[in-house]
Length: 118
Image 1 (cartoon, helix red, strand yellow):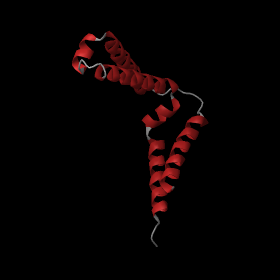
Image 2: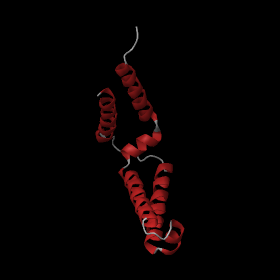
Image 3: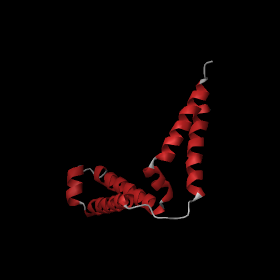
Image 4: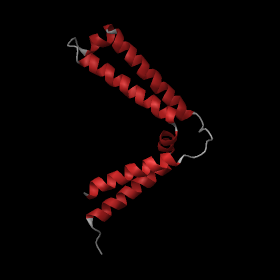
């Protein structure tokens, strides 16, 4: 019996969900709010630095070497990435498991399935 396209897609989504649940880095990202905050700040700072470096008309190299705000944003982005990296290397803190993380992961997978099926 041949599977429908929707069934195959649902199977792939279920496999992706299972793989994500088993990945320790994904688990840390879901469970560790400080790690998420560090990654979010690093992204926002890098995006700001990129926008300022490319949007000023001077050229990216000159902006990075002479613009103090670009340098500050890049430094803060690097600091946030370093903190996130250290948080990933540290042993996982023993805490009560949050159902919110599982709910968020389930919602993301369900939304993906809904998009594929629609």
